[in-house]
Image 1 (cartoon, helix red, strand yellow):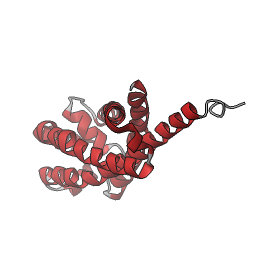
Image 2 (cartoon, rainbow, N blue to C red):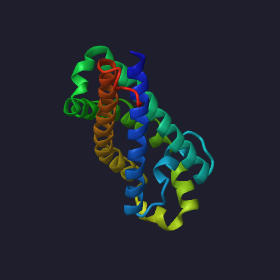
Image 3 (cartoon, rainbow, N blue to C red):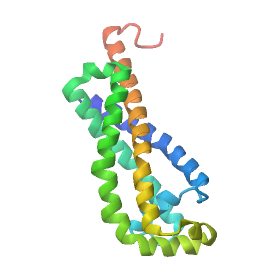
Amino acid sequence: MKNGAKYGAIAGLIATWSISTAIAASELELGLPIGAFYAVMGVSLGAGDFGSAAYLGFGLHLLTGALLGAIIGLVMCRFAMMKFLNPYRAVVAGIGAGVVVWLVLFLPVTALLVQPSMARISFLLAESMPLQSAALGNANQFVWGIALSAIAFHLVWGAIFGYVASAFLRIRAFRMTHPEKGMMQ
């Protein structure tokens, strides 16, 4: 049971770190500086400048990914661990978990935390990157466009999470059934 939480936390951290790379690539594609997504989160939580807001947002994103991974890993092991030894089933379950995370966590945070902070976010973005902030246009429309496109990131997060968690579970199952081969000699 505790292994499910441990493996889930590690898988969640790996998946979140991987998605952070995709987020950075998306920011570059949109003409934004790397860290803009995380800065929006950090500003929404009260950080006063772009740099510290980006670090705060990034750190909380990694922490959230690990915590959600631990919870999902615990649920996976509690109810149907044997099903998740199959990597295909685990990926599908992970994708489902990604959708749930998007619906239950990402959308409410966007609506309740980011949306009310838009004036402050727009001011800090304009102050720290005047050329890019002009390209954003209507900030509220931009935020909801990002929120809707974030479903793709959560689907990929779920697929990565499911596969990595399944790999950990398969390694553990192998070590339990073949104790003499589980250790390097």
